[in-house]
Image: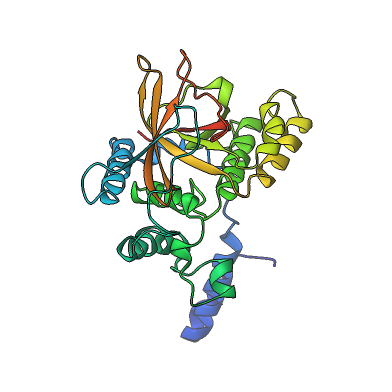
Length: 293
C-alpha cells in the first residue's frame, strides 16, 4: 500500500470517511513487533526462598499421615535378607487412605481419581489403591511445594517426567545463552551425592541394570540413545525424594509413595561420599538435582 500525506481537501469529507482514511494512514506507520527473545536466565529465580523446605515439610506430613499422625512406616534397605512383608494386610491400604490417595495424589496430578488404564477396563475398580502410585506421589509432592508446570511435567509415570527433565537439560546445555537453566538437573549416580530434596530413581526391571550402569559412559548421540532406551525400559521404575543424609551412619533417608502399599521412609546404604549403593531391591541409576531455593 502506497501512503501519502493528508491532503487539505480531506477536511471536507464526512466523519466516517475521515475515520477510514485515518486508520489506513496509521496502518502505514505500523511495523510488525519484533519476535520475542528466547527465554534465558534461571528457572530458580521464579521461586521464593523456603520453597525447598516446604517440599520437605510436606513429605514429612504425608509420611506421618500414613502413621496416624505419628511416626510413619520405615523400610530398612540397609539390611541383607528377604524383603519385609507389606505394610497393610491384603493388597491395598484401608479405605480411609485410599480416599486420601484419590484426593491428595491422583486428582491434583491427573484431574481425576480414575485416570488410568485399569479404570477404563474396569470402572468399578478404584485405581488409587490398585495401580502403582509412586510417580503420582512425586508429582503431588512437587506440585504442593509450588513447582510450576512450566518447570516439571506432572505425570503418573516416572519415565515421562524423567524424559522431560532430560530433554529440558539437553536443550539448555546445547545453547546456554539461548535457553533457561532448568530447575531440575539430571546426574548419573556416580557424579552427584544426593542432597535433601533431590530425586533418586531406580529401575524395577533388573535385567536392564547393565544398560543403566553404562548409560553415561559413552558420549554424543550414543549416550542419548542409551538413555532413551533405558527410560523406555523404566515403565515400572521407582523414584524417592531424599529427606536426610547421615554420613557418620552411612545412611540416607528417602520418602516415597507406593512402598509396601503406603507412603514410607526408606533407609538406604551409602558410601563414604554419600552416594547410594545399588542393591537388588533398588538398583539406583540417576540423581535429579532439585534447585528449589
